[in-house]
Length: 211
Image (cartoon, rainbow, N blue to C red; front, side):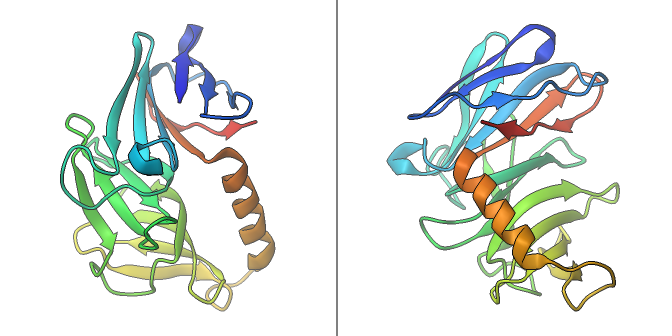
């Protein structure tokens, strides 16, 4: 996979192993990109996951399914966000090993630490953890396709890995078309197979990637 940062900090092209390049949108004007982090669920060793670091000077691998050594592995990264300490939180859907989890990645070493899943933390099981965001408190918000197929919004305590349902069909009021949301997310995920994040000189921003 090949990516490049163009003028003004725009991630201009992401090339997968096959298919047409994925074009990324221009970041917000308040964001001057220092680097882009791109996760892919099939381009790592043994068709495993990896996170690449892309800067104006080139591209390097931050972490993969097996490098640096340690656990948990990185199977199928679906989304990323920055934690208050500057580390990266990655939702891993676990398509290959069938073990979804939420992982913290050290941006300097690529070391991976389990936040939630794989027996860590109590609460609703992670089935297909997808999009992720971090609250000002440091708690982690994850959209999760539950074991029954309903989409949930989970709040995760990074200190314990405990998961609680913040909103879902049957929890909270308002519209609840979980099936349509789930099908839309799955279609987008299967089409792009990419997760991406910008590190900015002014602020951080999630970078949407479309083909």
